Length: 487
Image (cartoon, rainbow, N blue to C red; front, top):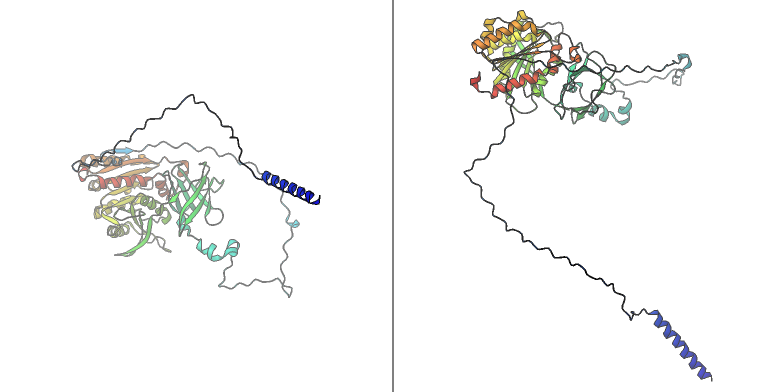
């Protein structure tokens, strides 16, 4: 009985174990899964295959065929040699009135009796401490003391002479900074060729930030600012913000090459300033003669830089006695003698084309320029007659009739009508003697900002403002391209 029960339990245990093992194994289903059946009602037609065309051989160029000449840029017509041109530009619209400043709120001043003076720091003996500084030691404050003199004081320091010059924007807008600090204006002047504004600058804070005043004689109310920016070792551009524009502009400086030169003469050493275009050699040049009177170099450089920006080399010599303590300017004869020596020196410079060197008579220097032209025979002559020239100082008709070089006569200023007799004489010489005279009458019709800059030396500022440099340089460049038979 026991053996039968043991066999039964053993068989039952093995049966349960077999069933458990079989249930734990996943077997493939015996019946297949349902398959999705689709009825095809429309069959897409296959697109035909288009064979690619065979590549054609590239024909060889015909060596006998002439190449088409590239189109040359249009060259503006030169100023006529047989007519008198009158420039009658319209006056610019008057500026909008500046709104009156809002009244300041009432301010109650605090009595000084209510403020306490700072207590002095006392030494051990009861007396105020003294700060002793060596004579060879420099005291620095602010950023120079915090970050080091070598970095903030010396490395990022540029001469204020670099602020003046000609600056140009991407849209060919020219902004001129004129150094007139040693003149009656007493400031840097800024002229904008787009808005025709001439105003003064005042140093605001730091060394490179200036505010723009409303005119050449006032600093307030402030209508804009100029922030000079440097690159490497020179001033490269500035940020211009004014009420005339809605956005800021970044004019880039035209770096003309300038050099103070000296050369010997029969009466001693002549000091002069040479100004060259930014690049190249073989430039056309003019010897600038402004008369025997002393003129501040900052005003003259503002004019010569405008010429060099238009690819024109210039040389102007300082009259004898100017800027010497207790000395006076030399005579007209001294001026003519020094100018002859300067003309010879200028023509021999390697940067100058010796065959295209002329004389630029400016204002009171026109009578002397005509006399020098008779003696040196320049390639051309430019005579800019302003209000500062006296009619009685001009040469007579016989002297004018003996001039055989191309001459640009530019009558400008506020009183051009007084030159009518001289213009008639020049027209007679041109029409009867066939002299190559170009006569231009350009009355000063500048903005009120330019008209306010009246004075003995305002003609230098007016020439930059009216862009006489561009007009005259265009005439000079046309002489080089024109055939000699035209003259």
